[in-house]
Length: 102
Image 1: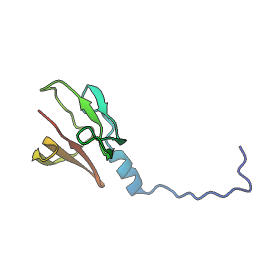
Image 2: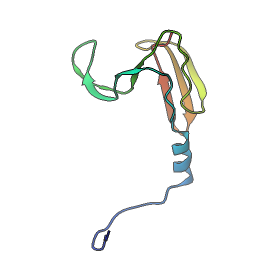
Image 3: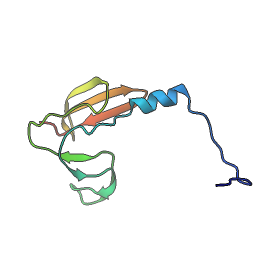
């Protein structure tokens, strides 16, 4: 492939870029069926268009949920709209949030 005559902007990945990428969650937290995807959808409660910022996974009550990456528990309590919830801080600005837990 020739790119002559074309310009492209690139930059080298910094150490911070690599640290952030390595902190990113990459494990599925629970076995189950995806019942709600990330992105635009019709809100199941009010029937209006909304952006869903998570992924919903249906699992059996009491099924273990695992951390998708190393991290520190930042919150573990009841959270309005999420029910029982856990928030994990993975470092470098990466956070995962689990809600509707039994």
